[in-house]
Amino acid sequence: DAKTTQPPSMDCAEGRAANLPCNHSTISGNEYVYWYRQIHSQGPQYIIHGLKNNETNEMASLIITEDRKSSTLILPHATLRDTAVYYCIVRSMKTSYDKVIFGPGTSLSVIP
Amino acid sequence: DADVTQTPRNRITKTGKRIMLECSQTKGHDRMYWYRQDPGLGLRLIYYSFDVKDINKGEISDGYSVSRQAQAKFSLSLESAIPNQTALYFCATSDPGGGENEQFFGPGTRLTVL
Image (cartoon, rainbow over all chains, first blue to last red; front, side, top):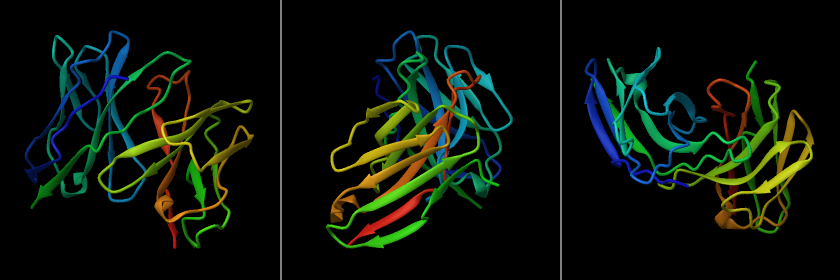
């Protein structure tokens, strides 16, 4: 499995954009980058995923570098409800291999 | 109603007791997973099942067993609970044919072994 590294914690002012970085320098060609978040002690929630193009949905944007060795999750206008632990994960999309390995993630605190 | 449910939500038990955690889903997904979460360690995969006849060990399967009774049900058992199995346990499901191939998580079971 490709591994990811994320900063353990970040702060962001309410209303500002939160930019969460992730390094995945050993990612292979068939692995996608996924982001999940976990609000205190609740089950993780899917946010977004991508392969090599930038992606956007109603929750966030995902920017993947051209060499695919790193990515950034962007929450465009952070609210207090975005305070959570954010997990960056790389996964193969092969149907026979679907394990998700979570690391410690980044604890994002949105400050009023 | 929640798509992925777990019972019980909280459980306190004693060392040596047998415990079963249950997971049910109404999403119609074939794939189901059990994770445990310890502070500062993220989630670690215990077991996963790609269909009713398929069971696979994850990263930390020692001390645990599972049963896939039906597509919708996946149970995790601790045959003889020990204190270092105190953790938050999550069940998840996924659909390999789905567009995002994301995993959907249950609300978690907080288990304390005294």
